[in-house]
Length: 232
Ligand SMILES: [Zn+2]
Image (tube, rainbow, N blue to C red; front, top):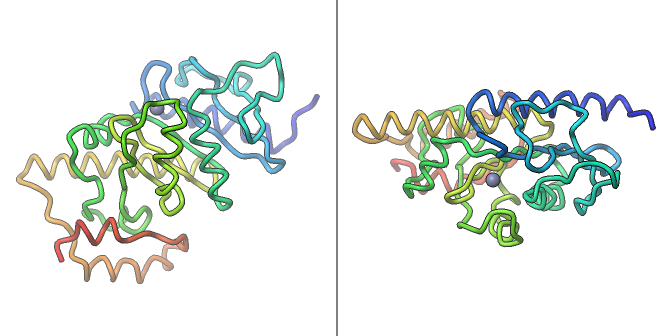
């Protein structure tokens, strides 16, 4: 059966983002999984056990909203696809999910250090805080339960001792949020090495929230994670 223009475009973008995540060190080996929700509620996603740094668009898998492959002869999707499906179920406003294991951001969760410290105006404006979902055994339903409260109100979150989950209106939007998470982690790590971050104040955060619309940012942000970590 011939593929629609939408599917062909999605395959190209998903394969490109997968390779970029590998090249930029956000995943290693066969880690990570990425997906796009197509208009007819099909999910296009990365296959299980394949290095995403070498993937091409013909290897991507189509599933239904329960994660069942639509082609019985295709490869299986990632065991972590259920996280993506939960995000699509809970958020009608997003159509792409990126899950990766960015080293420095994950290091913050391993060390138990907050990534929500309001340090960079761009991060405050685009993501708000970056909460950490409680640890859950990867690939189990526990992970879905652990992320649900955060997915409802955040576009980027960390899974404790595991990885990052970023949601977007398209796959590039989700990828850029992953980049922003790791950039925040790198910046905060340097600040910790130099004596500790000095967070933006709650007044500075309020001013940033007021100008978000200037940058075309209209999504709701949960600022509780930020104000808890601000310098008052
Ligand atoms: Zn993972």
